[in-house]
Length: 244
Image (cartoon, rainbow, N blue to C red; front, side):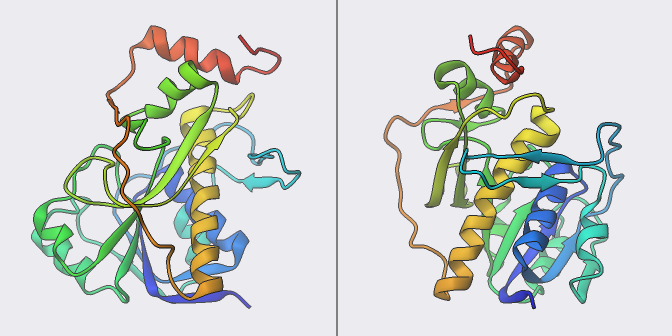
């Protein structure tokens, strides 16, 4: 039987990241008490039905079905399902709806580039975010492309969201080898983040509490949207048979 985390709700935008999170929760048999679905059109996937990756090289294969929406995954598993009226999480009505969700923790998988406002951050919930970069060295947008260039690795950091970008207290972080031969934005990065989320939620299940968080600003660097030429060079790190 799956474990239901009574203190956790999942806020899911229609994105590949939300799909990966939902499937990771299902595969781990660790479910939120409620799912709050942000409205919008789900992205279309025209690639393979199933992607299997050994993300950390330990022989354990993670499986992702990119075309399967978060609703399709969690709708049959979580009884408390709510579709919010607006995709703007800072809309006062949406803030109120989020505040009304069960528990004190929101696994946040909102739309990219959205900054949580003071009202939302002060609504009585704490927001667990999996950042696509090894913080604080790699903060900001598309940070994993820069780590691919500099270190031939990708990263993920579990942190509590605050009023500074990717600078909240850290629960866990990990470096990953670059996944080869997959769409990095829609498959590789979501699967890596989902892998770390699963580790964090397993710790919560097994110990009864989330890991103690810590602050780290040493060497902090915030990156912005990468230039197309640099992105092309970074993606060469993920091409099968290439390591240059």
